[in-house]
Length: 109
Image 1: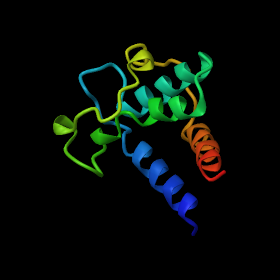
Image 2: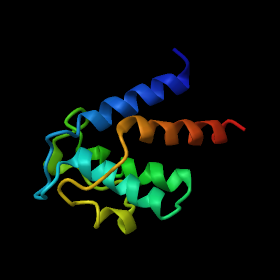
Image 3: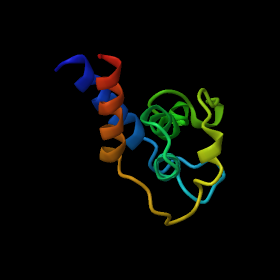
């Protein structure tokens, strides 16, 4: 597996691990992450900001640390606050990984 595939696999695993993790909100952290990415994308944000919006709460993943103790390492606040709506439309993890692939491709140019 090349490095990009490894990074994408780890990203998918971390995002998936956010399912069922709640931070006193109406949606779990996975829905929140995907909604934040969707809001960024709809607003025309560049791929890096879309990706940052999706990943900003990875510190809450049970694979990394206890959810209640993990800080916001990256805050995409513009998209974060509005991304807590039960049932709101959002991109899939695969959509977010597509953005990550574009970011990785741009970084290697």
